View 1 (spheres, rainbow, N blue to C red):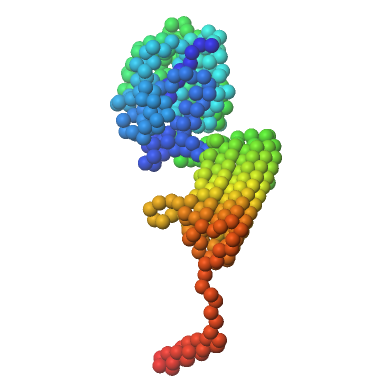
View 2 (cartoon, one colour; view 1 turned 90 degrees about the vertical axis):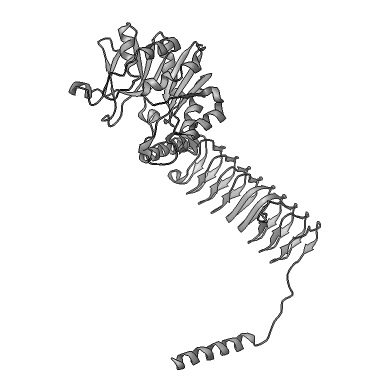
Length: 453
């Protein structure tokens, strides 16, 4: 197979997003637009990736360097159009001999199945392959104008197109595949003789046809090539991502009572046989094993839920939560960085942060792992079969031994031995008649204030 490389254009200002966050760093499915595009081109077999960035967004450059290394960065300065942007990657690919894909960094729904036909057209001998799509509303898009032989000869921008050209359904998606030598040779001939004084990549179509080179196109679904230039488009992309994810998991055997209310992330892993109730959010980093039940209004992030576990309703699993087989994490229970053993239960109104809970342990309502002293985090360990009474505060670092009990309302600051009972509370005192005397005194005071008024 011919070697593949990709040039991803991510130097745009993104002013229409109206956000201090660079456009390509906004997220769909919990992952940045640029990361999603990089994922796709890597999966398509691109062994070299160059991302063109601008000087105005150092955070974009930082992402690229962290993920791909500094050699993957090309800087466009100043920004002089799409053709100029691709040409900025020339030096980074000077030693590359193969096919180069040019794509945008804000197309989060692009899939390898959409790109493969472009590489296939190249393999069939087309010097230049272009991605097209047929939008519902083509008002803003350049039309792909074909010659008598059906091959693309130019792109007609809406403001320059004739009435007949505006009737053409196929529009330019801004994605191209060409041999590296041809691509950069054509770009070297592109001029800026236009109203904006910019170098447009679409001009390579005319340069290719002038050389009698065949320019072919593949029509992709509109959803796959949509960009995210505005908050509205970002929300539309998120909606499509969620629809795709729901369809995928339903087809894989995941049961959902109301799929339209369940939200997934780009890396969510859910095994067949899982049941998910309404209004559940899977933030990044979640894995759920078969037989688990995720009840309504629960939020999971960075967590593992083992086979047969029951989560929620109204549960929150934070990063590092590892819920064991058949364990129960109930309503208004928050778990962070705690491994919960097989069959253990924390059914209501508890916070478990930093530590472990042994198999079969039972944590009563109001159990708190007091894990933070204002400066450092400390761990709490509850042994197998232990019983933690309601409203127990376990002040870390502390260990409750296997089979031990703590009395309700206790503040446990020292380790508890296995099979022991730990109590930490004052003896109950009772003052006969105190409540009646208190009410009598208060009523008298109130009457006196009214009389004085």
